[in-house]
Picture (cartoon, helix red, strand yellow):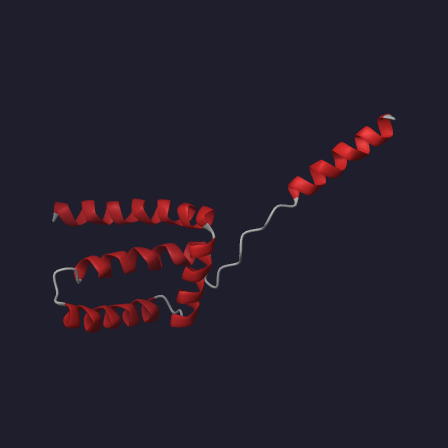
Amino acid sequence: MYYRIFAFFFFLAFLFSCGPKPAVLAIEKERLIPILVDVHIAEAAVQSLRKLEKDSVIQVYYNQIFEIHKISEDDFYASMEILKQDAYQLAEIYEVVLEEVTKKGATVGKN
């Protein structure tokens, strides 16, 4: 009798411990954070431009970001697609990104 109860609880514990694993990003989190910081700064820099100008300039900025961080455009967008599907990873990464953007903004404000 106790064996069946133990086996049942063991099975439940095993079942719930095998939850979905986070998807593997094309770019590691540690590398993705500074990339996203740069993306946010670039997006902020073009906010005052007109639509056509904005599209051209932001594409140049993105290409520079990809070059600086030595990543491909495909890897960046693949990682962003994965993050759209994984709210936990997205929140975890963006918490750090927002802290870094805030720090950089405070540094700029001092100059």
